Image (cartoon, rainbow, N blue to C red; front, top):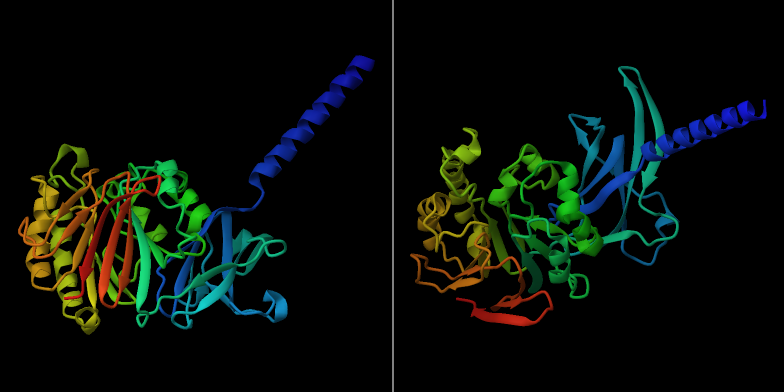
Length: 394
């Protein structure tokens, strides 16, 4: 009798533990983020991921002496065609901001447990820590600034420890933004890979408060999840190529696509990058003729695949399509990666009228720009200076 009671008691305890474990594992929470994308003078997009379907919002307050709870703060939701979106990936566009201004923000997600045409069952709310931690902060861009700084890394290939060493001083130096110049991943197989590969570390280091601008590399074009790239790293054009301006510099972010012919066996007849690059040329012509580009003191091109020092198909296509336009546009500098070795190509070499810095996968490029001067410092993982260049305004 006693043995039967003990057996039943043990089975009951095991059942309770399994139930509790299942509940704990499935409890609603924020998995990844937040991180900042599409920072502009008057807007920013705040990104994060929840483990279950939810409706989400961002609350923003001025970065002043007032308590965040001093008044009800405006809420921004992710909407489309007049409806709030429900999902796991949340991209909340906050608008109506002032240029060059600091703000505080908090994020919230409310679980959607059931949804019918005339009824929604909500669950718990997951949020950034609003009780014991300070709100996150960000500062909008400002074209009128006379001094900016940023850091660039590339070809990390999911080695987040190396990336952390290269970017550990981002907050300390109060950079305006960080540039990822491609191949941060080996391929795009899943959402989890994006974050475990580099974005979790980026979020821990700086990306909750300092925006990331991303130039897609050829490895981000690979994998079953590669079609989702633009949803995690949205741009103003809806394409991986785009442009933006901060202070005295205008940035053109180009996408060189893959590095081999479309017919290569590696792509399994799914590549169409030749036509993609040709279409990109039409957009580039419009950007180069814009008043904002023409009037900018410094003009910088960002592209993962360099148009020099390679005889592969992709770089040759980039050279054929983009160089004739860029050579006539008064470009001051191009920043590239892809080759995994440091190379500097001065203006006049490689059929380029402008200098090209090709960064290695073990260095970070610190960029400092004023209205009259552009300075580059290439540093190793110990923050020791490797190379240095200074360009004066033409």
